[in-house]
Length: 107
Image 1 (tube, rainbow, N blue to C red):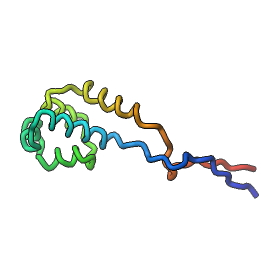
Image 2 (tube, one colour; image 1 turned 90 degrees about the vertical axis):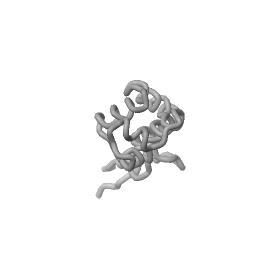
Image 3 (cartoon, rainbow, N blue to C red; image 1 turned 135 degrees about the vertical axis):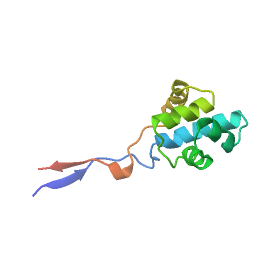
Image 4 (cartoon, rainbow, N blue to C red; image 1 turned 120 degrees about the vertical axis):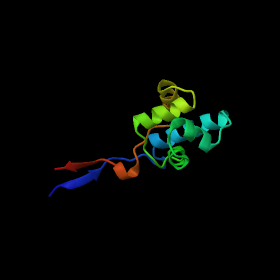
């Protein structure tokens, strides 16, 4: 009979942030820097204020077209937006969530 041997897991590490959460934070930050209310930016982007709110809170996974529309409404480009998010990700220590731990079958 074989034994299942778990690989060591990182101890007390938070899971990596989700892309949609970092995107939402970045969009909200840029909107606040422009001192715009949600409705103003949403109108410029051609989306509803409710949808933009959900994107900013990291609840929606917007399409690339929606991201481009919102970025344009904030007078930024996709490359500037994604570069800022990539910079944020570089500051987060990489970890594997405990729920995704790897196992090996030992014979």
